[in-house]
Image 1 (tube, rainbow, N blue to C red):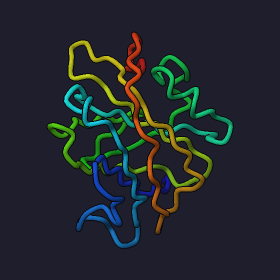
Image 2 (image 1 turned 60 degrees about the horizontal axis):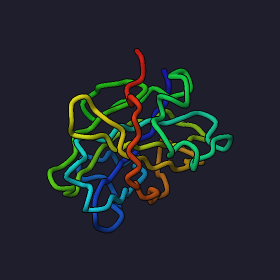
Image 3 (image 1 turned 135 degrees about the vertical axis):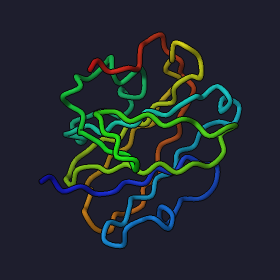
Length: 167
């Protein structure tokens, strides 16, 4: 059985979350993560897509943020993730809170080292469009307590690419 660590993503305009709500298991303290997004574009965001890449130190976050992750990496380079409801996949999508209000996302990530975490902002339109992303290095994910991480800001850089990874 593969060991997993909890990663708490907090999408908010406020301060970094110290924990991830009262449901957080005491033996699996989450990594706190704050993502900032300009309020001017918050109404355009319909969802966030989260992915974690292996070999994070070999990745260039500046390059990864320029266009859809699906146009740059094969799905095999992504770790299998699981959300709080037990849904799993190489990417997880979470609906945006209305008007950019605070929202918590709980994601289980395999315990390990050297990851790159990418959070993509996706449009509310159909078909979904890529609006921008945040790339962050995760040196280590432990089964126990994890250090807090403040995510890089998401800047609006709309691209004409499909953010959906082939299944």
